[in-house]
Amino acid sequence: MMNNKSSVQARFVQIKSALLDKIELGDMRPGDKVLSENQLAASFGVSRMTARRALTELVNEGTLARSQGIGTFVSDSRPMSSILEIRSIDDEITQRGHRYSNKVLGVDTLHASERQSVWLGVAVNSVIFQTKVVHMENGLIIQLEDRLVNPALAPEYIQQDFTQTTANHYLSKVAPLTQADHSVEAISPDKELAAVLAIDITQPCLKMSRRTYSSKGIVSYARLYHPGNRYRIGGHLDFHPAH
Image 1 (tube, rainbow, N blue to C red):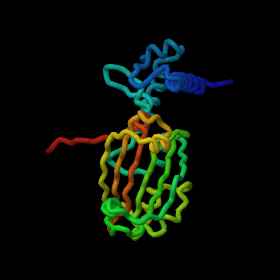
Image 2 (image 1 turned 90 degrees about the vertical axis):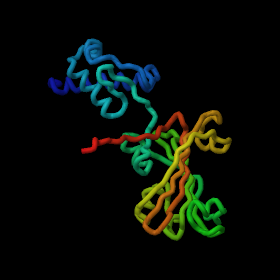
Image 3 (image 1 turned 180 degrees about the vertical axis):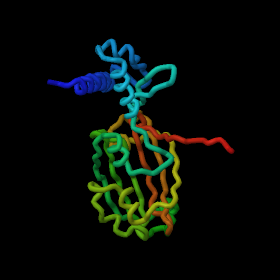
Image 4 (image 1 turned 120 degrees about the vertical axis):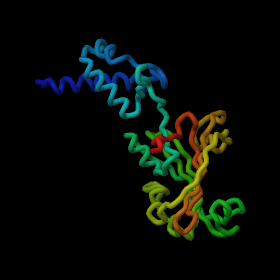
């Protein structure tokens, strides 16, 4: 026989599942207002406390957003990457409770062009490494990482199995990050990029260019391409009044 505590939990999970199903099916979209605690309680025949718990957990998980005095709304469902910190994309995805996978498109040794030499701070025609990896969240492509690496600071980079680790994880071990600069811009993809990201050529993209440094110099220069309808970039700042 189910005890009262288990019964309450089952009803609370039922409300969450019902709301998630509506969002997944597109019946509720980002910005749509969710039923109030009282309305959910009446609809599911539960207490207001049970309905509140379902909403609160969905807010804490980022599925819903609560606006004080206005109501609770469906959040923008696109994953969001921080512009205030550098994290490995597999960590971002798994921390959202989702499945990470990737596909390695290329691992190459190049001779630096004039532009590439500027990006990495090396001599023109010197040997550099390049990797191209597609990163996926729940099987959906969310990023193409096109990265150039300075062999002087990561000589064994080209030998790594990037199906088992990410460039970010590996470089953080062999050349710990001390500085980074990056920029973000909206771009229109060419046919090749659209094909790699599995999007229509009319779909806008986000491009982040990021150069990372260790204490010994420039380690890598990465261009990160995201389908605009699948990804967001943002962050949170705390401002403290002057004393």
